Length: 521
Image 1 (tube, rainbow, N blue to C red):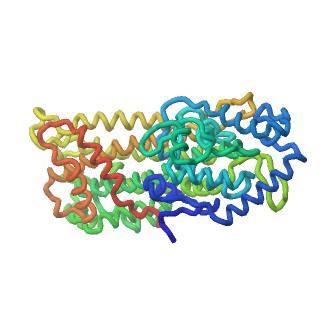
Image 2: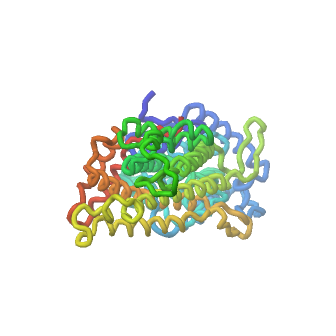
Image 3: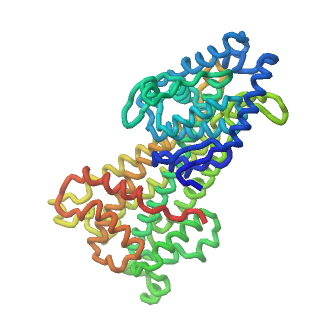
């Protein structure tokens, strides 16, 4: 099978597919022949019934105007007006990757053959995706019920030759792009405008990318967590298989397993039994020179990151279901030969899932920030120099400035953690009286992920300074030693004070591109 072609049949699309297409312009999508045939039958049924029945959005108005019946001569104008009347978004354009992801999800949804759109429309959307004609879609406008109407309308507007799009690295009018490529704008047919915008494809596309980014983020967090355990000479029983069998949450057990695998060759972890033999019990209370167990941000990594992993697995499963679902209204029940009017366009599955994932990733960020504080605060760690200052503490600053960045960024994410899907405000003449806000939930999740990378980048640099100070690189596990080398290739050891602003993005990129750990067994 050609790995550069993703076959869309409405059932097999994955977040991995979407990410691949978003990052590799050579990846193409192709509607399966079976999907084409199913779509053709659904379209024929729609055309046959449109003159006999009142069908919402085909020969009626929309939303609170659904009781307004539309004459036969105006059914095409109705679809065009729907698109133009909803392409009203404002704000900065969404990233092109988000828009492309939404286009792929929408095509996959329409390929299921329950919307009654023409094969010509499917092929036109496929053409836009494969030519990477990415419509300019403003950030503000989606309430995520009746779908992402405003944002998807900007995509639909491009398909009929309107608005602006990115192509070949330039933002330009869609009409100019189509003229250059000798592509005619699509002529909407009955229901097609509605089917293009009446679904959750924008939020689901962004959510697909968020899940993939979250997997990378958790992987990076476990690498910094493993290295931090080595730097403090943590006890190995905190990640032992025996301990975590006694509290068998899948995520917790998986995190402990991954840490054991990362640290299997470490010569810095301590064995509890050997430690206990060093100290003889006395007949009176006394203080020993070493800590008996680590602070929670070190000792409880499986218990804190485990729930993050469980939530990520659950949310990703829901996203996979969503991107392979029919999110439209009304939909065609082919076997039953009828139209089903309902609310499959409602985005609460994605909205709630993104809010859960978002909050869990904020906790991941907080975990990283607390470890940064531990290693930079000599009063707590009792070993490393203040602010990981490897020159002249007092005269030179070390990483003092970076801690402010980690603190402020974490604080911002804590604000973003508030669940967006409970911010329902009735709209559309109270027709949409409870809405999902799913796209904003997905966008905020992406903001939290970006912030988390800022904090994890700072933690990685902090730990690398600790490795340089301790001078025990040879005792690190093979995984941590390789990770340390990646950090140092991006940012050399900080001794003399210098602005690290130009160097930090290199490290952040290196962490994003690092191998993803096998998070799910």
